[in-house]
Image 1 (cartoon, rainbow, N blue to C red):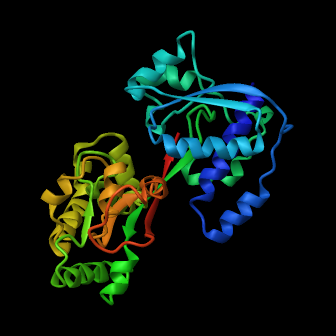
Image 2 (image 1 turned 45 degrees about the horizontal axis):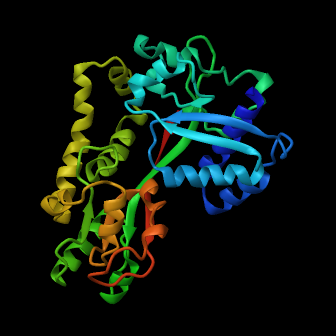
Image 3 (image 1 turned 45 degrees about the vertical axis):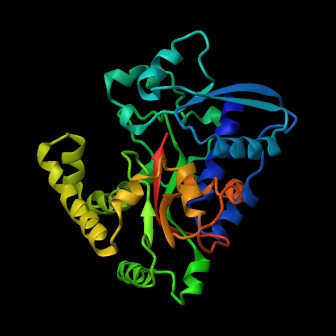
Length: 320
């Protein structure tokens, strides 16, 4: 069972990490992957998590079954995952695979989740950890490795290329160009040149812009990381530049927060609002983009829409 779980983890790591590289790197990774077990191997694996993008999960399972068609994978979303996973693991129907987060390590509240995890450095598992950037691998006090990163969330925006072509404008590549093109669209009668989901979730318009900038601010500052990890109140000052940046962005680009508040969620509603065809740019994550193809015909367009371009802004790895 450990070997079967390991083969799933290996495949998932390769599929996910491939999304972080260039197109050339993606091809190299995909071509280099070879199943380590007999592809006729059969098993039944139960996976537990808090992730609820079932379309993306279905695609990953289909990719896995391309290699192991006789492996049956069952995914269960656990409500209040962070607080309930320990209880689930201690129950009679514990999953074979589950998700840990780096911030769980060292906290008594999540000790059960860490204790149930395999030590992924065990040579018997045969995991090639060299394919992962060393700076995102969790370093534990006892030298074990209860988790590795398997998911990458890339922040960016959907761009309606047809509107840019119609108005003779170029897709922005710098902050100044972004501000200028928003102003140009507004002068041409577009009320909302750029929109995004604004509710309190990790992929809101604010998080998409603040989080990458904040990470860049503290990434190479050892003192900042130390203060943040120790919950030093003075560490709050490190967020100030990011908050000032988002405030400036909202002012410069003229984002209408009232209009953005009408978008009910950061997935389906974001996609359908963009597909109405009158929004040149829609801030979102790579996760959101995964559902665009299935929704292309679901809503009448207000403007011009052909095929969207997705602009990547910043890759941010989630360790689990």
